[in-house]
Image (cartoon, rainbow, N blue to C red; front, side, top):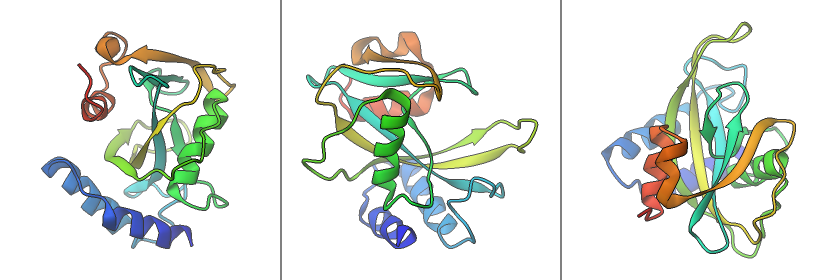
Length: 179
């Protein structure tokens, strides 16, 4: 079920440029591999889901301080076997990392796709995360950094570059119409 919903969602996604078109093609190819969602699949990597959550007024972005990478990034992570869809995985990750329950008034569509390298660690080789990203609007600014992250905060879109230099985050923020 998850595999089919992922294929349909990716097939309907229209990339914003040639780079994203290449990412979508590689992610689609990964879906044909054995265990594309398994976090122990390292060649070439595995699918993840993340969320670009904008504030209720649309002028700030929710970022978490990733414990392992030490970077300010959007909430997200590995897809779990009981996730009904990639969107559900992204929503779950936001809740687990920040305590924000996203309203279900309208289903989200894919907002962005990205492939990025994850450095080797003692128990994992270097590999890639094939990240499918969704955009949500929060109903509240209240949040709580959970144990999974080193911090969480709202960052004004106009000042985003002062906090993070991560190009995949900045590229997605440009899609939000950041000033």
